[in-house]
Image (spheres, rainbow, N blue to C red):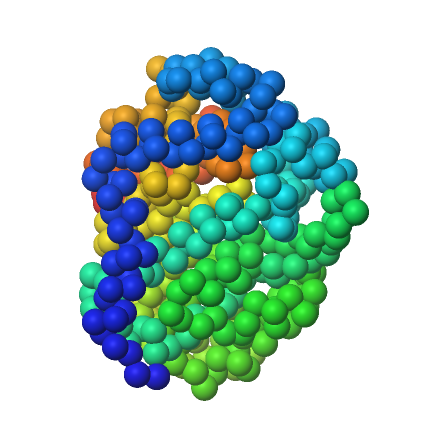
Length: 381
């Protein structure tokens, strides 16, 4: 495929400009995001109950909207499932994302709207910024090795409508693929057709599909969940006695789902896939909140899309107000969820860099410190 470098550069610049501008002035970007969110929250029953129309400052927002968790908002989500859409949403759901059941043992169901889906394509920013900075437009001549979970697992009845639900990583891939100049192989629809099982045999079928559809392709990008990428490499070695680096010359891997991708996981990833650039994606079922911008081993928030607060030992503050070395629990406001406590512990570095170091548990800082010590990273970017 012929790539026009000038046209590709212009496309990337247009896609990345809002993110880059927001990084330069996160305070202003966050003010704009909050105003847009409040405008939409006011259209919902939940927003009206909290007097959204009367909010004129950040202090008002914090006073009127309590911090919520999935458990506290779940009754409203169930009402949306029963067709009472305006109880929480200002536009109808077009799909549902579910977790893989790793949080407290059961899956969460998060509705997605058209506005929400448009924001999730920010998952492609890490790859696009890599190409823009390196000039490696030949990446677009290859394909993205798609190792994601199914984007469709089943259906929910919302009022009189049947709405599909699936795993967020597959949903991201299906929608990002339509907005970026690189094709995902196998297609997400082919993965969906294999079903939503999570057994070893289910994954073996997905891995075999990925190998057979990509073995003769130029895999320039690998995106998805970091542990799954490692499992796929071991599957290839066990069955075909080959590693991904023996088959493809991958330029970049954009991976998420676990902490420590650029520290704890990086040696194994490069040993199996070769000297590819590793870029971390930080997201959850509830949204795509940041991605690695450059070779600094930390992610940069999507200040232009979501509203970020953090609960620190000293109280609630804005994410961009954190000092290097400071830690706290992330609280996000999305088009779906106002002031939602994700449950992740965030560590700040030099602006604009952050790491998610794990779940909000007392032992997380200790485990992070131990991992940094044994990998000799010692908190370095």
